[in-house]
Image 1 (cartoon, rainbow, N blue to C red):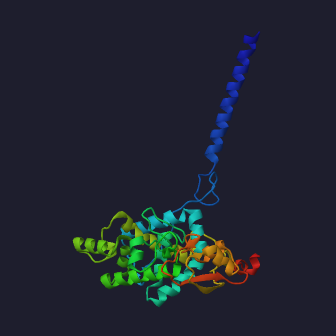
Image 2: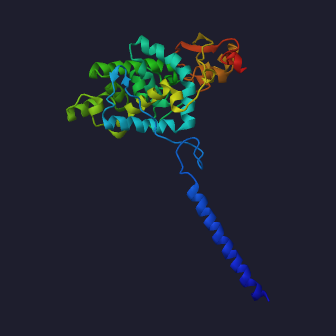
Image 3: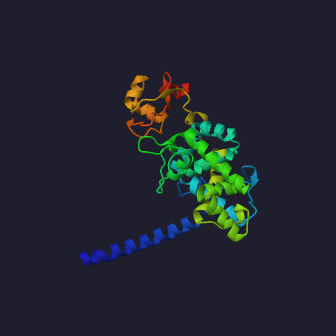
Length: 320
């Protein structure tokens, strides 16, 4: 009896499967092909290569975008930056805070303003950035270079994290390099490879233009990373980063400067003396690297002290 019922049931199931398959084939054939775009079915994001600008300059020098290798090198760096969403967003939010410090120093030294993007390429505007090679701070200065330019580097005080002093050192290096090469693109390359490293390669290859020179891979990409940040930061919205004016982190300007000559300088005690905390003292003075500074040479240190309601006055009224 079971076998008698099995055959009709099996036949019915087989017939239903054929019907379903035919119906699916008819539906699939009638559905439109997927068209890339925000309204496309079956995908949650729209990924497309970024548009390059029609023309571009760096520090007043024309970038030869008509060359395929120049275009593709810029394209590569823009893709990497644009699709690193969280890191790129964080860098964009920080730019007004740090550019407010960097831009006036560049201007005083007659260094083109575009070099603020070199700082971005170096550290992504992460104040505490440290490279595997030991470079530190926004400008990623190596210990030896810091010493050559008079910065103190140690476990208690490290002036590579002093934004104003580090920016001044960067300017001095860039101007020294410009006196050698007379090209701001080569100056930017030398910040990565060193002045002599660039000079040797130009001489060996018989060229004088960054865009014609073969460099180590990191340096080949370096200037284009700077250019990519310039393109994106000048118009974030055009590349999908919709940041309202009130979203940017504001400059930390509500402070006064005092002189500290304590030997040793016990920073929690210094903070308490001026009615603040060690945490906020470190935020305003990131070059302080430990709880105390022995200060054996009895240096007089200029220290930023937060003004009244410092933590509140960096918040815009509409955000409170």
